[in-house]
Length: 564
Ligand code: C2O
Ligand code: CU
Image (cartoon, rainbow, N blue to C red; front, top):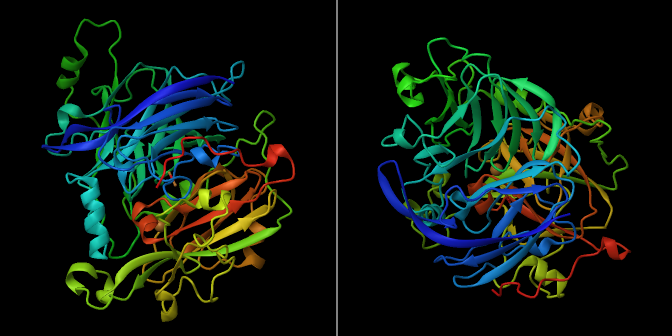
């Protein structure tokens, strides 16, 4: 393994998008942030110095950090935030991840601008399970608000209703040709003909699942969430916030359209919530074929060819559930000799968790129009098994656990919902509209094989939820629509080549089942990766106990854990 140290300064920097300029938090002044490149199995050290004006933490999304939750990053779960002027040294231990992951702030909504790609190459001496790509390009999909992101968060929390939607989606930080003042900055990927490119696609958007495609070009998906898949050739992908998809792009022998050498790559929202407003705009970047052996300047030649072609027939519409689910449920692990799988078979912990949108009544003395803008004058909330998660704020869960500080968490997150009912029907128990509040966690024995069924509900509003687990990758063994029925649905589980992911899109009014072995001792956050649902409480924590042997035990905390 290799060790290298990265110096990262959290600082404000002015950025101009959509005709207006604002200060955003960045790493080293860059937006999107710097790309980290490692080989499988490396350990790196990251020094995070907060020169910004706001508390922050940094999370390594999808990096399992064996025995070392101290560097995982979610604020008040594994650490207190790094205050302005302070420094925290994080040790990032890569184990079996290979492909693409990413890093992002895990503090308030700062990940909107504080994020970047992690490229994990095969171990030295081994190769990709596909022909070597000519070039590797991060494609980071994001969202941009003209307002300060902390103001967006503040207004959202105060309102009790839905957040403001973003003003643009972005590709590598740029809104693209279809937005005001954005054309000059549009991200452009110049390619050579008849070459293979590896696109490392990341959905860093805050609140929207996205469709992505490239005009006149197929993509061959070869990995998801830092794990290889069987090659899947498709004309679009569906990608949830948190997810990363590796896709090969084979360029044509000559530009596929004789009169045009520019093709749009485009992304827009997949949104199924009823009465949920979303950003319905489309972001674009340009794929441009280089002229070989030509004296004409590339850009001049391109201007002569007119508008880039748009993927009209490939990019699904926002409500195209069939396309979205079709793609998501078609992914399979590579599952070959070099990349074997290890699906837990004997399950010793079954958990069935509803994931719901809920409401709280408007508190006495509060103004319905100002602060209770949920349906019928309520405040919107979200829950798992009807517990709406409350973050501690004096100390984080990990330190409370490690130092035996009582009264911070209750170790009784339910393994079953309080009521069995028709989760996806129309007439749902009103009693469940109002969840319970609490910092409830679930303790797992070291080495237990966990099966977790996420059941979407239609309580206040049904919508797809990208559920994310820290500290593990899990096998997604099944998906379905409607209510989960163990007798029927367990028979359909894929235990042969299920994809290994860290984020799973649970379909609206449906369910998804994941399996993992609890062999990583520590404190691990689980939550919906739609930021508004995380804030509303669609979260919980797993505490995995130490095993018997030293190699199965939590590492000691680093000396510079930030104080609260
Ligand atoms: Cu992408 Cu809890 O994180
Ligand atoms: Cu959600």
